[in-house]
Length: 510
Image 1 (cartoon, helix red, strand yellow):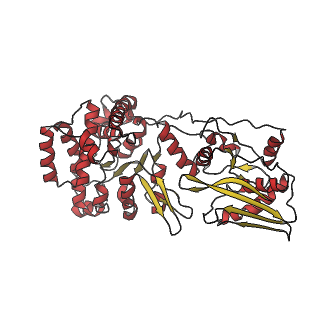
Image 2: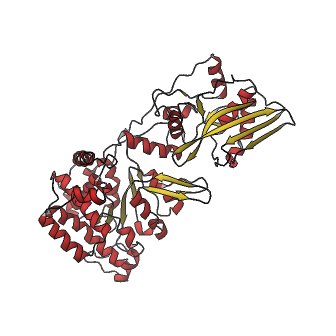
Image 3: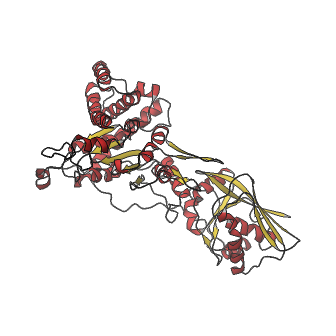
């Protein structure tokens, strides 16, 4: 007789059903595991054997065969330990044969019989709920699984013995409660930034329309300080966005204690990051920084220090909103709709163009440094801003500063306008102006007569590409939303075009 237990295999953030088939038959003692399993799965035999012995059970001296079907689907990870162990226990009579019907099982076993947490429990729970199954998972992952559905049965035992007692009716397991991180840590506030009013304005525009932003200036001007305060003015995640972000974090094993968070991700990788770390990949095709920053911010400090190939690998995710990892035997796609914020010095010495400073290498210093950034990459950045040094007057006698809460209120109001506009146009999949394209953009950002004349002349003089032209229109639409205007005017376009002048200088150096 073959005992079957349902589990899953992960392809990106999707959980594909896997049937664990366990057969105990007469023959020489052996434990065979088949079904295109990787090293972590084949090692499950020893973990299962030790865990069963620690729980007071011993494997029979018979031929044990475990098949993971479908056999052509690669199986990776340690979450197959628990379904294999439970299938064996049901096959030898330690569990009722029908106890596991209607359940999907994931979990890693320790040698003492405890059930250790695994990655990907949230997508596994969502996949199980879609098939009408309950879920058996580690206790540490129970709160994470409970988010899939309030009506789905979830069992989260600490050990194999606890699960056996539950099915025997001796110790009933209660359903875990979904948990949300309280978010008590205080975010850095914009009121702490002295001076840099123009940069604060650009930060507000970027937050309101989810536009990409590049800050260029000398060391100590406050570029990183400004970028680190962007999360304090962004709106919290919507329920749909919360689920998307949490599924990626779950697959990456980044959820702490099974608790979800409503704060938008803020990822700041070091400039030594490889292409696999940035876009995703590796032996198990894990999500990269662009996917971990989904629905949040990817901050790249010291931008020209990143490898040019790594920066150019961001061009496709910036346009499509997804990171596609293609290998010889499989293809995986992770969501990657992120907001890029970058900071850089104008040259190697950091003070090119600053009044009273002359570089010993002359213009070559800035040209070679900025030349590490390709033109197509820079063309995907909406806002380019030169950030000057902070004056002594701003430090000694700072003027009145606006807290993040006041800016966040304006940002939330502008985003609400954008959402209502897209819903009225029958596009519930769009949330911000940065996502609009094609006919939708031409309809929502059509300028008045004076604005059309300015945009036509500017496109000719500045030689805007089609992508650059549309990005100017998106920024202008966001500026109109912040001012509460229905129509994009000449003033909105003039300010949006001003954020492209620095781009032209950088592109010329590149």
